[in-house]
Image 1 (cartoon, rainbow, N blue to C red):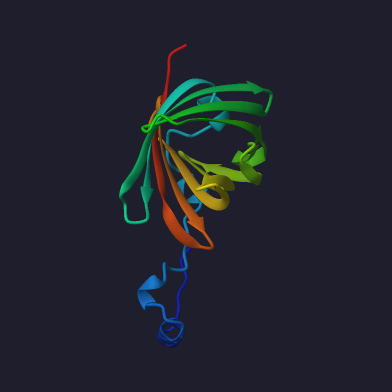
Image 2: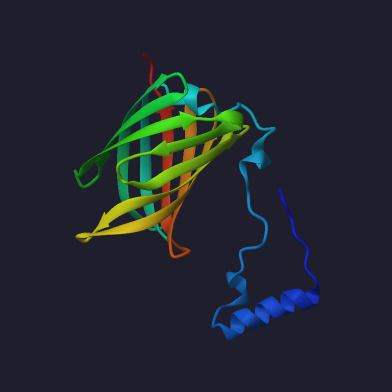
Length: 190
């Protein structure tokens, strides 16, 4: 993990600027950020091509920024690969009965890098694996009250064992945290 050091004067100056801008010094989240390389020594090693191959079932929730559960859902998925190109067909069923489909086209690159595209993803998702972890970053076109919002996702997956993977995605817009999506994936036999 990368760490930075700062002098008391620099910390005071940053805090004073935040106060002048109307923000609390507690709004600072730190200068170090987690990367997949931080998990390089963790096992079991997550290989998306291997894990997202075949049938999977996921259970999840969507929370607001305060942690209140807004929606529960299940996802039935089928992953297939031809060489380093994969297709992940996701079928969502929400607790209110609404259904959605998202089909990802995934491309495995060198050194644990992946890219992905889907109809409701703006541009390209970019991801990196490290040890048992994988981090995706992408912008989802999210329909809200008749409008479409561009919502950024910082999506982390952690392989627990050969069958189970946990997923935590933080949603934000204009750098403001909107909430989270939490999922538990299970590989299915056959």
